[in-house]
Length: 483
Image 1: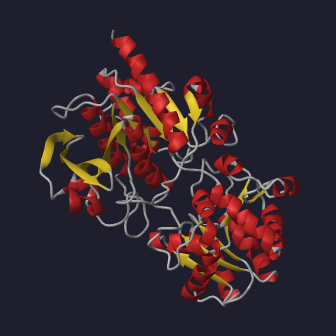
Image 2: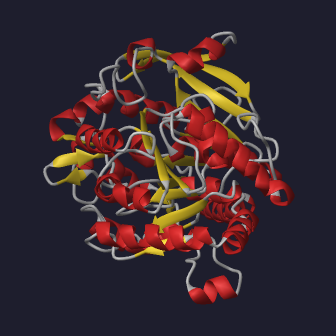
Image 3: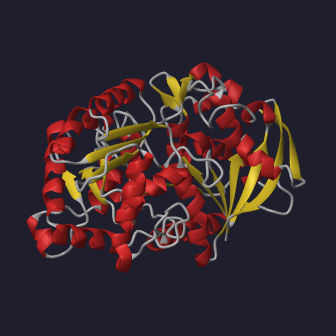
């Protein structure tokens, strides 16, 4: 089976979060089921440097008025179609923001063009190749199924929601500029409170919708977590499915990780203490016997980082230390940095994201903190467990089903893998940190908790099988309709 995936980012070439990790890992996991994935990505500068070494596959004379070249690139087991449209993607900054942190003003066009190119390829524009199915991800590629519907194409589309909070909402005046007719501006398609929503368009036209955890799939049917789209999702509930994310266990493997100065596995987990010493020194923190907590995350309200700024002092009262790696809301960043200034040698904040540093943090920290107010799946806690870094998480979305709380029963049964808290408030997080610190004092109990976390299996094997089943069913339905 041939699948065309359409995404705005993919690891290892361009990454802002978990979306890239999923789109980079899932195609490799699907290969064992006989599924060959070609992934369409924008031609950002980091990708073009490699893609332009290869001859063009085809030319697009006009994608919403823009000329573009389609190139092919194979890297790290991935087959990529690269959309080389310099006027849209070859610029400073990141995939969504400029070098000053502001949204690119033409994001509405940049990702409509990506979706339109995906639809053209799916409909047969590329000589000699046509996919059996299209898999889109989040709002940036959600218009692919809208375009395909208006082309009259019968290629089935799966849309995966990685975070419902990001919806691609723009003025309805742009509808004609993205090449869609007035009939797309209806409550049954893209109309969203007087505007247009790219994500809603995808939700109403895709054959199947997946969400990155079963718990989040249930949560988004409510008005609390539905972000204004709960009505649309309830109407399509028969086509909505939660499939928990996996992780690439080759990239995230403490026994072979090139970013760890001291590698380890289940038998040599004590080597973590050497990484901890390196980590403390790198961030200018004092050595000591207390637990080292870390947070590797977007610094936003959704991720609960304002709560961490409020309760961080709790960690220092019991002799612990804290490292925060991430960026996002400037006010929350400032609050965290101010706390670090008040507790020199015990807390460090690094604004930004760096892949090698993230690996070292998992490999050297005792615990990772994820107090998200909502979390579709979360990958950080899965990476952390693999590295014997015990998660402290809120009980929501994918966090609630990937972490087993270290209550007395779970500890006695040797099933616990971390600490959950609910309700998701600052005091709940404070109590969870206390529980973690108390458990840490019992070295034998903590070692068991680490080992149980490391044994948890969150590879892509089971999740890829679920996707393969969805693909097979949808292509079968499409074949029946065509016969």
